[in-house]
Image (cartoon, rainbow, N blue to C red; front, side):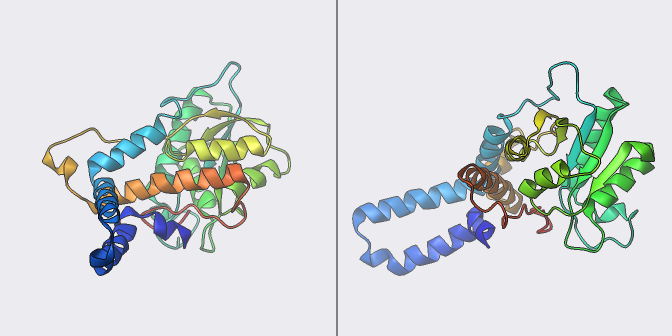
Length: 258
């Protein structure tokens, strides 16, 4: 519910309606402020505004895997959502694009660290956990079953970290962490709070360079990007303040999942 108010598109529509209804009763300064807020909200629904936010967030972590030697031998991969209920453990088409990006980023890292253990983390709203489908996809792409583990209970980033820390046998406390570049700052904080030493290995960034006139025109996909960044900022602030660790969710903009 809270996440819905972080959408510049939804909030902008509601804000615009309220301003129109109250316009004649607003003092001049309030009208100017309302116009400024409206311009900001429109800007956040354009690729120009959305990618400015995305670039700012993604710049907080290195674009490539970074870790001091010796490198960890455990790669923890966070689920990124499902688009529908999977029909089986091998129904990879149910995985959202972000889950797939994270699987491929983890496999690229494991090619560099072939002895590393892959630990997939994340439940879903469905009977089959997204981490289960992600692990089966990794196996189908050549990872030996003995190099795979799954954590299937957690449904938030905070609980990803707590659940991985509680696995038996224990996971080493020095890990590679694979998630989206957008999500990495919040995820890293959660795992460090759970006692892990985190080496970051983000999936490829989502920032898009300017490209033509369309870059300054409102687009639904741009509003989704802005909402995702605002969600990350609000979630990380809540973690640092000790709030919502048991109730927040990490929506996949395309599916409403994690």
